[in-house]
Image (cartoon, rainbow, N blue to C red; front, side):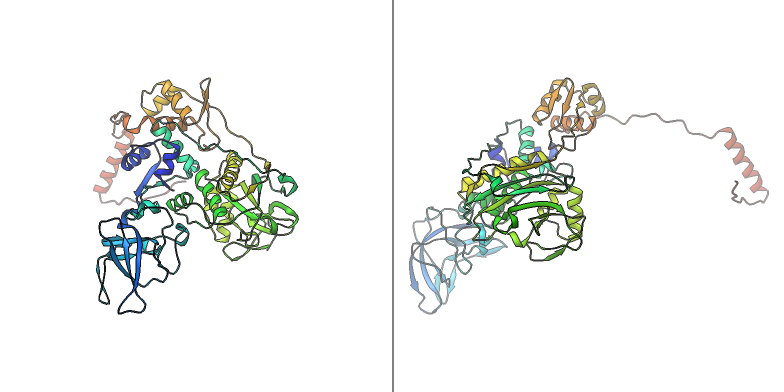
Length: 519
């Protein structure tokens, strides 16, 4: 799981905490940090330049000579063959002795006899994809679309100066496969308040039940299914902040609607899917098991053959998605889509894992679902997606939500016995510290017992409670002790001594010992 410290810092105040201190303390409290990277480390001495003048190269028809303002007293000159440059354009300018991703070094030199004091960069030369910045151009120099002054470090413009933390999350902590989950751990580790986003959906009128219906036929494999409708959708690029957050977590931007579903995947650890409602026959969603040899072409363009063990999302006639794995090509979001359905659901982890394995298509969604997600976060994640739609002006959310909820709360109260916990840990932790720690971890504590939050499905026994307490208390504070134990004195009994003496006498008389088996 990769996430930027900037994103975590929006939910928990970690100002003044260095990346190394953050990594060390998070690791000690149970969230192991594999490493910290800064995407911009490979980019050095690249700034925003403004093209002031363009002239033809005197000795090359396909080259031009550009004069650039790079924020210094003197302008610089760069020779280029790019066709998309124009006067007044802001571009990334790699100056003399600059560095680019992949170990590329740029120095001044002459091109066909004319001095070139650097290079203007494309998005690829800066290690970016087409969707990573609005000014990227497939066939030329990248244009800086932000209103910045010449000489500004390009890393500040592109958001490449943020520290990205990579966590190793164990399978039992599926709640930490999300930014909110890691922010919770950060808040407790640094004893800071957690500031979760306030989720509100304004709505635009109408009634979702007039536009769509949902039927769940297998309530064992689908514990919860929610659907919301967004009309007057405007498909387009996502804002810069959203693109940067996705990129920091290893995802590329596609369009605003798809990016919103990926954002929820990262923020809540809850997979989502968006359907074009115009392709849902009968304006209906049916969650059922697939029929024998039923087929669907998934979003990757491959036709898949299904079997009855697999859960599928269908409209009134055909499958439109493999539940929890991948959507179908026949209902994908396109540039002309105007009304969409947001699906947010909770599927059985074992079923999703087996389906993904049979089809040979393990995805980000299936990797999460197979760890048995919390069904009680489904609605909030759906609401958050709709809130982002309204924030980005990407569409109008129809009032109401379809929520087919068959989830059961199977949590049980666990005794909090400080004496037993301290004996188990070899510590002398106060009862008050234990209670305060559990409350900070979102446990409900009363009458000497505690109840874990719904997203902590790994909490079952007293030993689990002890682990929660001691990881926040600090493993390094547990006193060292010598190994203790009792052993029985060695030696042979009388019968064994007689047996050994007899063998020695007989072998001394020239006899050989033979193994025999008695019944």
